[in-house]
Length: 276
Ligand SMILES: NC(=O)c1ccc[n+]([C@@H]2O[C@H](COP(=O)([O-])OP(=O)(O)OC[C@H]3O[C@@H](n4cnc5c(N)ncnc54)[C@H](OP(=O)(O)O)[C@@H]3O)[C@@H](O)[C@H]2O)c1
Image 1 (spheres, rainbow, N blue to C red):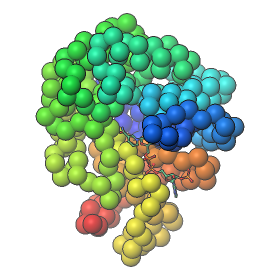
Image 2: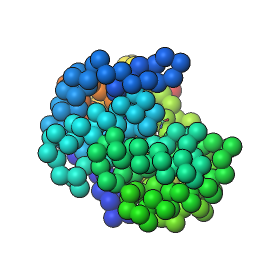
Image 3: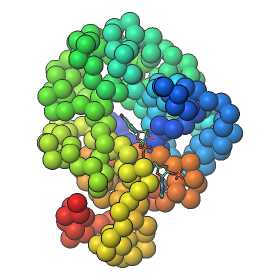
Image 4: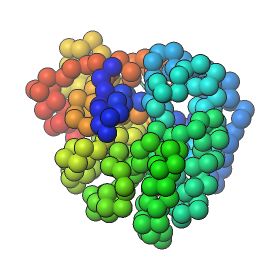
């Protein structure tokens, strides 16, 4: 496994996404406990394979994703300091008191006493960012949050967040994959790289639908890999980029984790860059 190291923290290039864990969509995401055994088995398999970064959010499964992740980690007996948990505050909870309450709720559901990386899930122009960061700075001082970050932010908003955060912004989580590159084109990726911040690529394998044409297949064959692995390798071969594919299938989970070890040549990176 390859890692990124920043702000004295090592984080693996591949983490575990959890958007569909523990919930169902009924005019909003609600907890659904009827598949808990399936999801817990998927989490156990991920932990056994060596996943240590779990990405979640108070939104996912109406909070139940955090509960399942917390339970699986707790029951695995893994040492807390060996695990890295990212969770996110929903944009309607960005006022000072709401951030503090959301954090307490996430910690309770995760059965943890600190969050490794706490992100603003989406910007909310109706709440002054200053107010949100007053709460986030407080949570860092109180030891409840190790690193703060953002998600779905453009460069203008990242700069505002940086000016308000008392600790270096850790990550910006955005859609990034071979098929979705708007954040590379608009300068967000370059800004993160220059400012020592992670760009965490979400939906990194396009919900499992990778276009497999000749170039992709030849590169996959050359590395005895699958096209999904090459799509992930293309991401994590870029500096300061990590990816958080979601899979509940143990063989996909292993494939995705192993993708971090694929070294693409500069020529292969160029060929993949040309794919539309
Ligand atoms: N910050 C945000 O606003 C935001 C938004 C969206 C997502 N996210 C985060 O990013 C994570 C990942 O994004 P995503 O869930 O949207 O999409 P994704 O990871 O690109 O795709 C997930 C789908 O791909 C399939 N899959 C996974 N590995 C595979 C493989 N090796 N071969 C074939 N199929 C494979 C999975 O099915 P199987 O289970 O069958 O493997 C699943 O259906 C989310 O879970 C969430 O944590 C964040």
